[in-house]
Image (cartoon, rainbow, N blue to C red; front, side):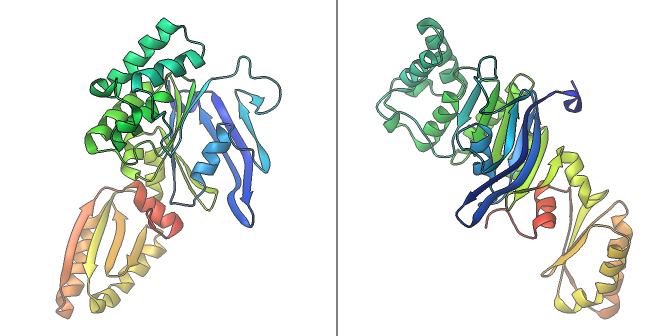
Length: 318
């Protein structure tokens, strides 16, 4: 099913949350569609974790509302409502229980029969590569294994909506692939909201992406449509010295008048174009005429981080 045709399962309207004088989330509104993976992106302090904590019901907003399957959160009982799973940013496991014991115990807490809880525990241990440590105490596991177990615990009851806060933080590359593939395999069956700093990971995983900063939504759309905010074509980068930078200013101004994406940050000129060859030739001719040298020239595909920097004027990992 086209994700645009999927029904909305979770809607936040004008969410606001303050901590003293700090406005962590500022009138934030968004919709999450059934079965999609929504990547929730932003720098530290952008309000991602606060928003996620409100969406899953662990923190009340100062104002605004959250609707889950059409029912306002907090109004009435939860009978018939979707089940939720949460994997917090800080690893939360039982240090004195083994992975198998933790998963089986939590399964019974979610009303699975003992046999079903054990079967679910075995399936998750296998899926997250914890077989060799299934009977070792949680405190003896490596940080990466604890992180994988932390995610598995959120999946014991096969929730309808899954919230993952920085699930791949601290994972080695092999674990990242394992977790990514498992999450991707849930697409269409489970609604997933995942916060991350990693733009590349978000691009690989997400059906849609929500970029926020200062508690406000800056962009919410598919990855391709967000990248298209930089214009058609690929991204070209030219590294120049101070004299050539000044000589290329007329080219930059012309691109700005044509409403193309163009930026000069430090010594690097960046622009998107479908006819970049002509623009590069113009830059080379200018350099040759003045006897100057282009230090570096490159072409690459646009990334989400390029859009983020354009929207916020700063990088992701301040």
